[in-house]
Amino acid sequence: MKKLIVALCVLAVLTSALFAGGTAEGAAKKSNLRVGMVTDAGTIDDKSFNQGTWEGILRASKDFALDVKYLKPAGTTEADYLKEIGNLVDAGYNMVICPGFKFESALYVAQDKYPNVKFVILDGQPRTADYSDDRIENNVVGVYWAEHESGFLAGLAAALQFKNGNFGFVGGMEVPAVQKFNWGFQQGVKYANANFGSNVTMKQENNLYQGTFDDIGAGQQIAASMYDRGVDVIFAAAGGVGVGVINEAKNRAAAGKKVWVIGVDVDQYNEGVMPNGSSIILTSAMKYLDRASYDMIENELNGRFPGGSILHLDSRNDGVGIPVENPNLDKSVTDLVAQAFAQMKSGAIKVADTGDGLFK
Image 1: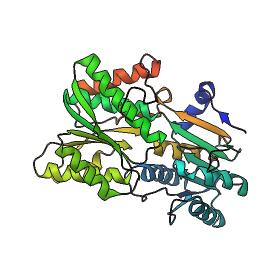
Image 2: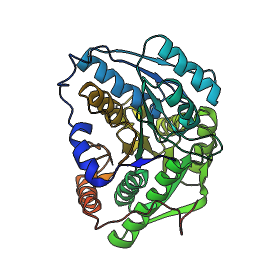
Image 3: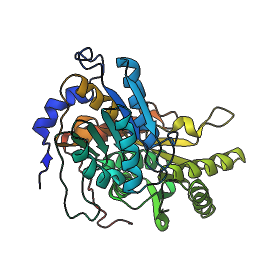
Image 4: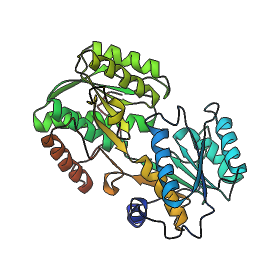
């Protein structure tokens, strides 16, 4: 089993490339790069994982004059993903970005089948479907995020803003990345209650996983039930299911109700905008998907593609956070969150990536 885990000392070298932006010094000699993407469950405009990844690819296409394309598979099986990866390779795309852990077994096969193609998998690494083996070749990079840290910051911000109230969580599939968002969120709320006098409650009945990332209707129904039970704020880490949560919150806000949603993965403020210009998105727990896809493309253009590596992006390398601008948060709140983020970076605040003592 071959697996290279990139330590902080290596990340320090890569971070300047990962988050630098700007022009690609090697673009001229690598101008034959063609970048493809295969979408995960949901659509390219899911306001979350697929869209965030694709936006980074589009930005790279504009900055570096690249040919880019995405394909949506018929389903979410290994065979479905391999078919579209093959279609991209056959069409001449020599870099393929795959957003989501569901691509793991497909890339386990593809990395050997297409050794001259560069692959990036977000939230995963190549492994067999039965988890009996994980192996990453030099043409693949895996990227993970510390979702629990951005969840913590969002929970802290919401609890500081509300001071009192009832919060809920809606997840998509009960997988590690979504669970970590949830666990970090709960820890952020608890931290605000313990250190800043907030009195925010969370109940097990308002903490659940819908089981998919694309059932918008189910997300709306779940949100309606939670709001009916007196929940003020729902953190939705659920892809398309989260779109349903946002839709329900907007409907209720239009009827004069004060309900809120915390977005995920990207800044979802604009997705919650009402006809009057206000938004029901309180803040968002972000992991910079667009930066990851953009920077892996830029690294390849510059001859610095970290193949065979697994990258871990967190507060220490500015891989997670909440939006820079939060119109629905008081400045006093964002100042305290910024302080907490600095303490997180220094190690003074440690957020657990497990659910010990928390709602599952």
